[in-house]
Image (cartoon, rainbow, N blue to C red; front, side):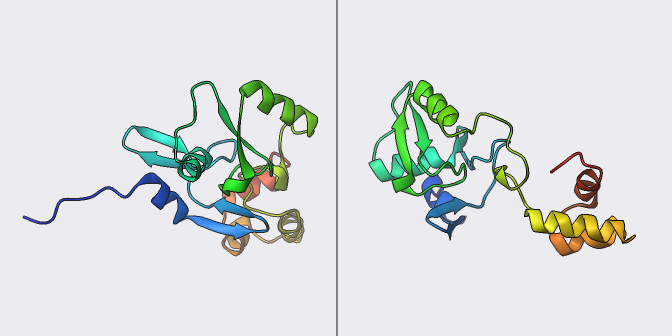
Length: 154
């Protein structure tokens, strides 16, 4: 018989996947469709910025409250960039900052490519290079490049 398995707390697993970028601490693990970090725990999945806020403040997020990003960067988990607010305050903040529309390209929280890389991909495709040969240079699947070159993405 071996030693019992001890679960690593969600905040430790989350902070192990953080990278400093500019003034933010960016969570580089799994993200949802809106670009917010996700961390699995025993009861399911929790948002990384909520874990960071709770860890930094030593208490749970009160019922009916949300965690707002002052930096407007969904995967950011820096304590100083997170504040407690209501859903209405969060929506008003989004509208006031002009973020109410669809986020495309580099503005998407899930973007893996920059505008410059997309231009390079399109140029190489226009010159006849195969997507299957271009894809490894950018770390994305050829099907994703196909959507980019056909104008369905970006």
